[in-house]
Image: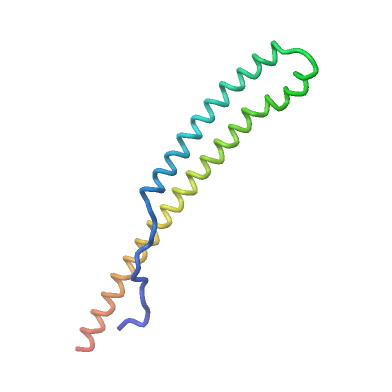
Length: 116
């Protein structure tokens, strides 16, 4: 018997759920980017028609919203990439386990032939 033991259990990872999550995150990020562009235009339209002290107080905050949407979109894209990286790592780990199991079986068979 080989002097090492492979991992006999399979990697537990829901690849379908990971795919759905990454796809949804990318879709929402695209939607937020489009919304940010539309809002940026609307903010400037509103601010150009608004006068007074309240406009001056509100303008920086209103102008910040599209950028914040863009930041959120970026975070969602990073999330999607991290999920895809985790799925790739789970797949690679499963492949290594399967390769190790096959190697263990070969070594065991070789030892049995030599011992026979």
